[in-house]
Image (cartoon, rainbow, N blue to C red; front, side, top):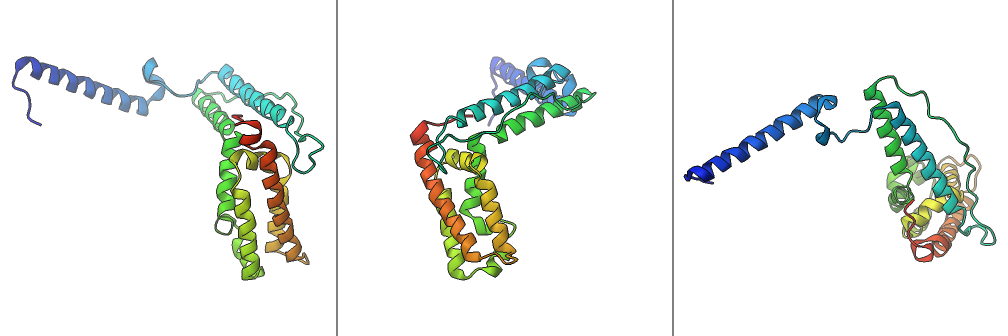
Amino acid sequence: MARPTDPEKLAALRARQAANSARYRARKAAERNPEAAPGPRLRAAPATEAAVVRAHEARAAARAKRNEVVAGLTSARNPAVKIHTPREFPSAPAAIPDTAAKRRQRVKVIRANMDAQKLTNIGRRRKAELADIMGTDPRADAIRANLSSDQIARLQTAAGRMSSVSQQTLAIYFQYEGGEGELQSALTQMAYPRGSDIEDMLGRIESMADLVEQAETLYGPKAVGRLRI
């Protein structure tokens, strides 16, 4: 683009270039030394001991709230009762780091953990794993060696049925209704039978698919609304 020849426009252009250059230098300086960056540019986690304690308490409060909400939902395993959730006990944060950088890192880790434990994020990870169970599971090769092509197809169909429900349902079922342990046990015994009946393990996973589909009608978004916890 041609440079303006009008003196006023030329001056305005140079002012914009100078401002852009100053912002670029400030950003690079902040990246090299975050603690020296000007206030408005700082987006790093707080670095005080109180900030670590607050982050720890916020994570505990989020977990307690999630457990409280889930405890009010009907169990897919036994519709006559509510889902059992673990009892929470107050706890103090681990030894607080003695430097600002380490405290800031601790706060970032706690916040990342809080985000990872939200139902939608747990369910998203589980949905992706189930949708490609023979591609993502580390025991896939061992399982493939022990199953016939028909049995592998049945396993993938059952996993696909489970992956078709909502992230919310998957998170609650696998986190609170024992689905995680049951699936891992069945897959391990299919990979390393040691006398286990492959058909029995496959039947367990197919029964899990039935329960997960039932769970969708009990605590999926259409049944209880979207739980943002």
